[in-house]
Length: 130
Image (cartoon, rainbow, N blue to C red; front, side):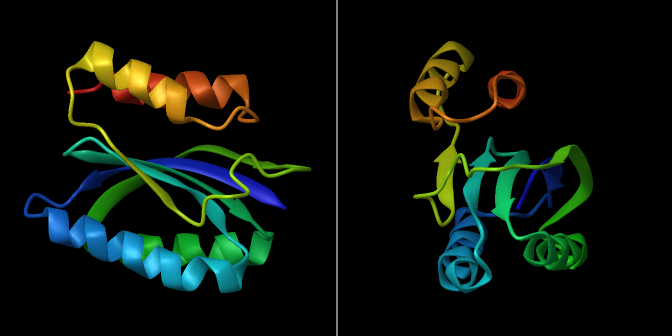
């Protein structure tokens, strides 16, 4: 079992419907692949945490690399895990729309308790962008 955290830049013309389509496809496809996690979108960038079997994550990362809705994928974390942090989230959407202080506080409340503290800090730092 692996966990990957990456960031990417949204396509300039990306709309809400596009983000909804990503989440709908994740809800359909991830259970069969054994993938859980969440997607954070701040209007310009994505941060995604995905976890599951190594082969499933490798295949998903290859698909994501070909997806024109975003570019510039950078892996921030990629490591083996013994237990999922997001076992109940097929693909939770965390959209950041408030001012920075409010979005950081709201995101901190939503993140799973079992998430690694370094990854938690990375995600909260992402919330401060824009």
